[in-house]
Image (tube, rainbow, N blue to C red; front, side):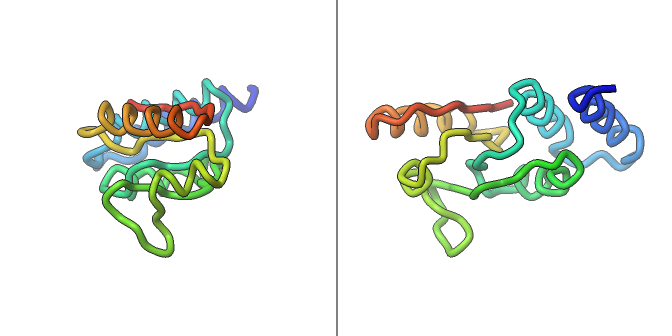
Length: 124
């Protein structure tokens, strides 16, 4: 079993093992599968809400490295704004939102274009 199939298998195990399905489980599974298909091991998360909080518990099992967390509405010593991420050469973004992802994707792509940065974005 190669690494991709091992991680997909882990995804299936989570759905069986966790009988109490959390609010964002389906969205997280979709994001994980897309990340695996792209072959990403590190990325920046855009969105610091509930989906992000639930997604973090999966990152260790999949050996994902979250480079930074960004959010348009929050700014602290651990959560940065999108401009900061782009200035620091982040180019892979996973949007951790099940409600606002179309607008968030549009915003980060427009900002990247304005700053002349090439980026990739994964959403649900």
